[in-house]
Image (cartoon, rainbow, N blue to C red; front, side, top):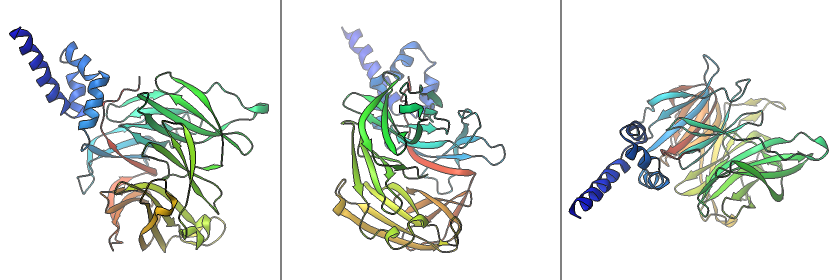
Length: 367
């Protein structure tokens, strides 16, 4: 009996030690013995490690590299003010035959979704460097209409312990529908809902509070379309009264949806003065930031900041530490403070079609 108790105690100690190690170390320890491998890859261990890894975050930047036109992910520590590389870059497989830019979606529990522009959707755990390509949907469209995916979302349904991917597509002209993919079944199913037109924006798609969010509606009166991962219900959230597009040409305003101080925040960014139908003067740009103080309550929108003028910004990407914004400025990552600091700080992170997520490392398996 004493021997059995001693063995159990030792197993508990080993587990407590392993739970506090980073993903990189745990991948190596898979090779120590079969017992450790089975433990590290068990769902119970992965879930516990994810809960303990709340402070282990990385800024993951996706870009199309200038020198060879390859899609890559780079890894940076939020604690490093210089944003130097914290790990080797991850060259993404040629998921798109033409090697076009991939759209980065997520994160959710350490995994992200990558969408190419030939209807391909892929899951990726950047920390384990594993990928999974999702099967094509088997559902057709009326009259042979070629379905076009407009937006994709990623989330976790805790009620069934399963990951879901949502795609919204145009099933026929101006008829927007949705399908859901379940990781556990590796299959798609249709959703019985007719949706408003959705708008693909580079830095808008957001998972927050168990809901995934996209931009929807016409440019003149946009709103937020949300999808609850558990109940599988779509809802619409109105923009705040007095938003920037009500005072300027709506087409001249870029939209981003981010998290600020545990609230969902809407960033509205003026591209600059409209010179003609497509060209903007980017020498005088402004940013306003609205926070929804009570999630889902449209009356709780509060304008937090009005920043500028700036020049040369392409897109506002994310908040960083709640006091700085990260942005794409002329194919280079920059940051600037939100407290009366409009000076841009540049980083040696360059490329086309910059996107980023702030991700908590995890061992979540894609299979």
